[in-house]
Length: 488
Image 1 (cartoon, helix red, strand yellow):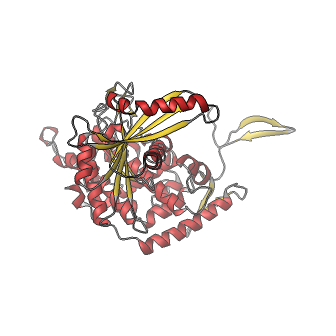
Image 2 (spheres, helix red, strand yellow):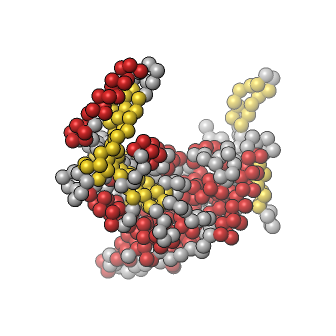
Image 3 (cartoon, helix red, strand yellow):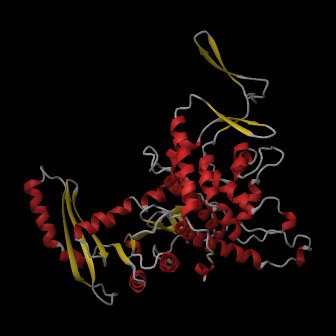
């Protein structure tokens, strides 16, 4: 049954009253809370500046939607929970999304269609459209744009991080991690990975360890080593951070997938400290055998009183065959009711073994694990369904920019305990998914939220915090800087 404005659905009875549903009410939008996010993003000029940097080979004659409008539409669809281009069938005429894109609510002037979004993702151009088919050259401009966009956005993430810090950091932790990104088609350069038992991509992500701000997102083929391209990705980040804050101590933190000779060399030649997980081997097992025996003996006597027994040791003379010199290894030896285990960390930091393991390596559970989970589960960053590899890499970066905006939004509302550390899903549920009656007049657009909405007081706090943060950012942050130096 198709429900028209003149028909209704009978949903049953409540006592003596019928419950009816019809689709002839006033115009209601459902993502009103995103206006607070837009206030933060727009005040910092995030999408405006990014769009200005991106190469856009589209023929102006055939262009209706600007790069900024398309990026804004894509990012706010992602934040609202509509990650697919097909979702634009509905959002392009949604008055709220038109407002977010700085357009007047007008069904006669919709936002970009799904096909337009897809063409922009592929840097499609009709520049040669008037030529006969056999005379159309393969345009190098498109190929260059596809590649340059990936470099530009990654450089822009670092630029954005630097200019939104309201005070210089005393220390920077770079959290790098590879994550599996399953595919469900025949996407270019995806492949079957034996460890994960799936067809996938294997992107490399880098975050600021203090804030979780994303600093890089590089899509990679599905079967590369976890460390592939890591040194090349980290070098421009370190260079930019040092240019902004000379002398700032930098530490690279990662699991054992990045514990390879190239990364050790990179850190030691760029004055970057490192804390890497390290895989066990017979040499390390022999070196910690006595410590394990001591822990087992202790557990036999005191296991009921202390069911989790840990001991930390360090090995300073360990040198793998491929290493030019010994490096410090910290070992955690643990006995629990489930059995014993040993974990190893290689580092050139000098903290005591327990502190190095707990206060440095274990903190990877907060960053990068939580940001990666938010990007996948909250923003669906792993929905890479384009055929082309660079188109998927661009799509991953758009999701990453959306997450950067989330981090900045959380920083703006950090003084509100209820949401200072809220996940994307919680922010969307409590603050962004707000139904409002929308009325358009000659001089104003009026959004009316229910007086009974349970998070009304919280949202008013959020809006005040956003206004205060925007004023503070405007006063203390530097203007956008060119990122061309980071692309060389």
